[in-house]
Length: 301
Ligand SMILES: NC(=O)c1ccc[n+]([C@@H]2O[C@H](COP(=O)([O-])OP(=O)(O)OC[C@H]3O[C@@H](n4cnc5c(N)ncnc54)[C@H](OP(=O)(O)O)[C@@H]3O)[C@@H](O)[C@H]2O)c1
Image (tube, rainbow, N blue to C red; front, side, top):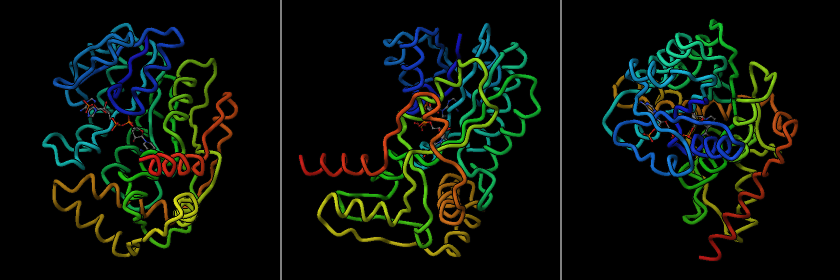
C-alpha cells in the first residue's frame, strides 16, 4: 500500500493517478472538508486526516509500505485562508508524519523538497524543507528526497506573475540566472517512478530540458505572442528586507517564503540537469514548448 499525503494537490493528484494506472494500491490522506471524490473515483482509498493531527497520521500509516509526502500549505496561506502556519504543517507536521511512518515500519519515504534548498534567505518554507530533510537523514527508513526546480505551471504562468494575457512579468533581481523550469507532469512521473523502483537514490535534484533565465523566458514569450511584455523588477536588497519584515508578522510566512525563493533563484546558479528524468524514460517538456502552448491558447481565445 502506498500512502500519498497531498493527493488533492496538483502534483500529488498526478502522482496518485500514475500509481493507480500502474496497478498499485493507493491510500490518500485527505483533510476534513477537502474534496477527495476525484481520487476515490480514480480508485484510491481515502482516509481523513491532517498533518497537524499526529493520531490521524498514525492511523493513515497502518499497513503502508511507502509514503509519498508532497503536501504544502503555502497555497492556502497565500490565499489568506485561516489555518495552521507553514511551520505547523510542513515542519512539525512532516516530523509527525515521519514518526508515524517509522512507528508503522514503513519501508520507504519519498519527500518533495525543492532544488536549491538551503541557499538564499531563511524563510519558513526553506527552514521546514531543510528540517524535514535532516529529520529523514536520521531515519532508518529508506528515504528519497526529490528536489525539483520550479514548476512551469506555477512560475511561468499568471499565478507566478508571468502573465502573457496581461503582457506583464515580475522578476526578483536582474532575471539573468538560468533555471530548468520543469513540467509538473514530468515531476509526477519521476516521483511515481522513484516510489517503486528497486534502488532509488537518496537525493534527486533535477529540472527540465532547457536552462532559461526569466529574461530569456520573456523573449520566448514576446516571440510567441508577437507582443512586447512589460517586466517589473524587484531589487534584491528590497526583496531580502521584505522576507525579514514579513516574518515579523505571523501571517506573512507564505509571502516571505515566496520572495525568499525568488531571491534564491536569482542569486544561485543551478547545478542540476534533466538526467534523472531521461534515465527513467521520461521525455521532459521544454519551457519554450510550454510558453508556445500558452501563447497558442491565448491566440485561440
Ligand atoms: N511549485 C513549484 O514550483 C515547486 C517546486 C519544487 C517543489 N515543489 C513542492 O512540490 C509540492 C507541490 O505539490 P502540489 O503541486 O500538489 O501542491 P498543491 O497543489 O498546493 O497541494 C497541496 C496539498 O497539500 C495538502 N495539505 C495542505 N495542508 C495540509 C495538512 N495540514 N495536512 C495534510 N495535507 C495538507 C493539500 O490538501 P488540501 O487540498 O486539503 O488543501 C493539497 O493536497 C510541494 O511539496 C512543494 O513544496 C513545488
